[in-house]
Amino acid sequence: MRNGVKYKDTNQDTRIVLASASPRREKILKLFKLDFEVVKPVGVEEEYLRSPCNTVIHNSIRKVKDVYQIVKQGKPEFLCHDRGKTSRLLIAGFDTVVYLKGRYFGKPSDNEQAFEYLKALSGKTHLVVSGACLFDSDREEYSCAADITKVKFRKLTSEEIENYLRNEYVLDKAGAYDISSYGALLVERIEGCFFNVAGIPVSKLVKLFTKFGYKII
Image (cartoon, rainbow, N blue to C red; front, side, top):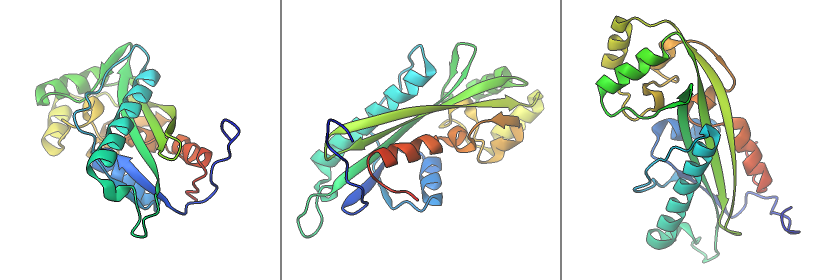
């Protein structure tokens, strides 16, 4: 209940929109049998604030707001069923950062920077912080949450890093690695949610959907 009004406890007439260009996030949502559509944010430059949790929430909100404007202005088919009844949209946006000792490791600009990132993370425990924002178009309200996973890298040799970069494209990946793919070989252990490292704080997302009356399971 919010402002004295109870949310609909039904999935009927609700459409899920993933506000992301990430194929990894799309793959994760498919694993959970969610019926959703993808609309990619356009021109949203990720910003870094002092707090990594505030950063991922801030960027997730911006992505959701951008996609909602795209839906309203350019994709009216998202707003109505064939019978003309307005659909409620739940738009999910996410952001993930890699953080170590006050430094952000974002998406590397080239393989040289990717090598530098992985060398800096080698043998150390860093934080992977993912934020989720869920927007309800009925009330034009959003709710957000963030989760933190600790990731310990093995002590990596320069040869191992070079071999990794030859075998995986990392320029679209925060921290220059993908734990759900070949990058798992870099990791010694994790503390926390695996999917959070891959880009979606799953337990937090389930709570956000529940808050808006949508049942995932």
